[in-house]
Length: 326
Image (cartoon, rainbow, N blue to C red):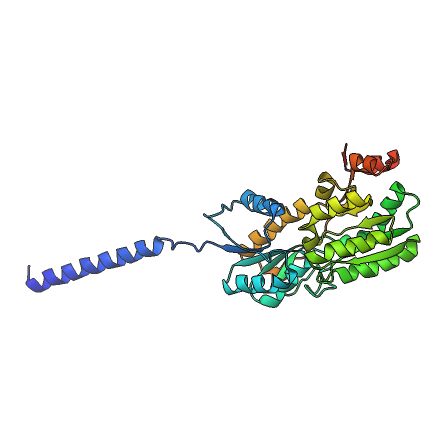
């Protein structure tokens, strides 16, 4: 065999090895990037969101990583923490309430945002419509403002003589403008006088509540505003000392000693938000994911708290309750 033929065979063999190695290399999958989820103001309620992701197969530290940033109870810091998460280029940003969602919206127009329990996402300009969000934001709404009349009616069932109801609101929460409009309409409809109590920072709680008590309302209504909920123990303790019947939105506040609540299940809203994150990580655009609305509202009553207020809960009201705490 000639030297030329031997060299030619060696070249072909070598070329075959290169081609084979190329196919092997192509068959090897590149390590997938671990998705990062940005969360603003972590709290125990977020455990339901994390549990929802685990149910969908996401393991913290393995198939997903969380980036946490906190405004530390200072609403004016929301913009800074939202910008910080945006600078990290997280894959999805998840927020609770309208104020945090608005901060995230102003921080990025490209990173998908999943909002949880927002009061009025259309009226506040977070989305174009519930069916077609239209931008980089989707998620779920709590529609709590639309239930204002129902809450006053429930208070009237418990306290037939109620004629003046205080309403705690946060001017930093853009959805609370819808609350105020709803409350004014409810007051005219149900013949009650509203007393609006404004609190947007912790140092305003004590003077605002002291002034409210001097005004002697028959009852107080509290929303699920994230800032207010972050100080819910203070609120529950204050109204207990002031002997002021109070209506809440989350039933967890009733379990913590509050009198009564009516609203959607917050744990369910957080759990369902995990499904949005999953779909977005699979490639679905937020604009194509309709905003969900709660379909069930729950009534919870703390009978023990009612007794300390010298209130007798009518059997007709107890029969309506989804949860009664003795």
